[in-house]
Length: 340
Ligand code: DAH
Image (cartoon, rainbow, N blue to C red; front, side):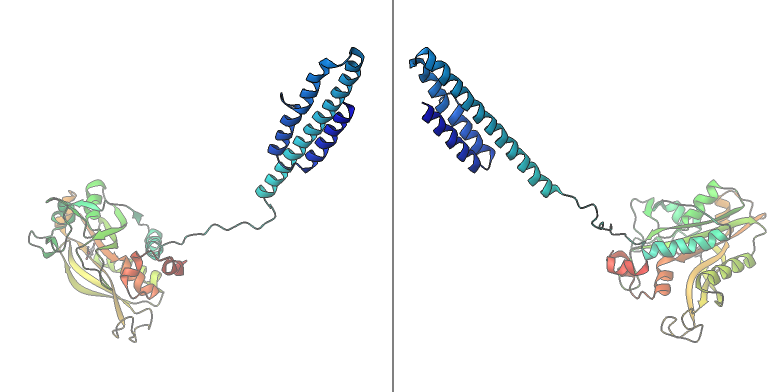
């Protein structure tokens, strides 16, 4: 019996040493200590022994059982520790490793241009107002003194949503909204998106941006218009910039003008940017037509004003030397990141 016990103990020792995972150790526990295990069987067989033998053998069996239990416990502990260590290794975080920088985006060149232009006007005391991209035909055309048969109203030029609602073709309807909401003195600009049924090419896009300006007060004259826009051009394109006001026609201004600036690239000598003329057209403007002022219920004998509208894409293309308007809308990061 003693031999048997010793053999069991030795075997348990050597097998436990070899066991490397929980499954193997558990298997060994069942084989030795389980209901049908070797030790249990031995204990069962003790009934045949004499009382003295039973006592001494019992002690021996219990001691061996105790030793095996301790060994098993140690083994389980060892396996648990090893598993933990392995897990730590996998989950290890090296806090000294340099972090990965999040990729920073860049402001879109049109946003940069709009912010720059807005800043110049804000420094001259203008505030910024906004209007919706979906407008009424009344605000976009009627209230702006466009005749019922004005070509811009045509379905081929304008995106209509219903007979009375459209995607604004210009930021000028914000003039109407402002006149209906605000009393003079009015001095606002309004940057925003506009839409026209244009087939995209290098200089046309069905969606583009404008910045509208409106100044209304007592005693506003064409000199205020010229002074403001000349100052603006010098701030945006440099102090040597000259401006030229050419007569033009817009339904909502009278008189109306288009403004050219001396070419900031060649200084007026003539180059590729100004197509050899030395001048670059940048905006439309004029004295607000009395019919528009009347929409705001203003006394046109007392109040006068000027307005202007500027194409953001055009300015951005000139400023940055971009030769295709479509580049602005492709959102190719390689393009956009150049304007950081
Ligand atoms: N709305 C005009 C356009 O889209 C631009 C414009 C010209 C706006 C003269 C004005 C202005 O306010 O006075 O072509």
